[in-house]
Image (cartoon, rainbow, N blue to C red; front, side, top):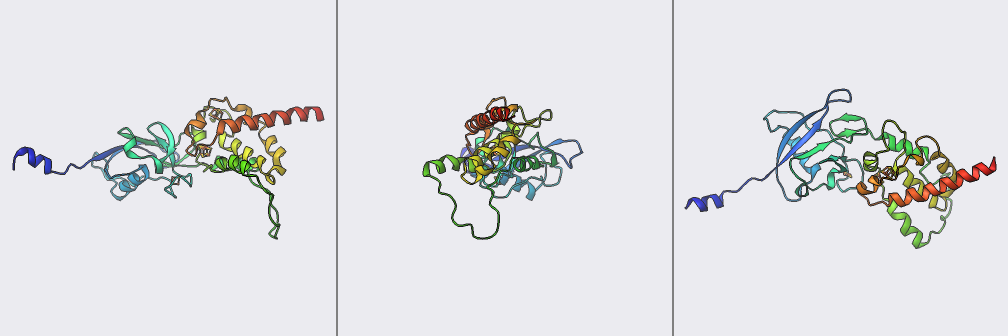
Length: 259
Ligand code: SF4
Ligand code: SF4
Ligand code: FES
């Protein structure tokens, strides 16, 4: 066999290089570790983290602990696997390795307390959703009968907003969501828009708008539109921020005249 043919028949093992920011606990210093993972067709960042967990050895040959991360559905539905990949907040389960520049840099979201490695505490979004009563108020366990009818056109407008997975990517990307403001962020404002548009949900409309009027409310939004750029569910965040902002303004003016 010629040298050229021998080279052709030797299978080349393709690998993918990862640089992962790691932190043992909320108080320890972060450090980077590199891993080389065997390439597989269709692999994504979560499947790569699984490969690393099965063989947690760095490129320097050091055996380390498996990387901690949150993930559940693996189909961009649960919202738990948000992280910063090559500098952009996104869902790790839908981040295809073949579409990413290498080395692939993976970091935890920067605006949320690190629990360990890539797992962060995103409790703030759930507290914000509670603060604006992001639910349809239906009391009682008895049969309330059928709900109000919603026209197909209204359903079509509401459905995209209902797809929010509370991933927090919009908050991570937002320049106004930081330690200096207590800004609720785009996702919470969008849910105010959704529940205020619901025939039963709108019973709490003015309470929701009032919750967006104080410190950290909708006036903190600088309309930079970073949020809509990163939202994995293509939620029309800037339209919702405008609409809810208009409703907040109308309420503020009518509150003035009521005094
Ligand atoms: S429009 Fe800009 S400031 Fe407002 S929520 Fe989105 S990213 Fe933040
Ligand atoms: S609005 Fe989009 S980016 Fe923000 S939490 Fe919901 S799905 Fe995530
Ligand atoms: S694992 Fe559920 S969204 Fe990524």
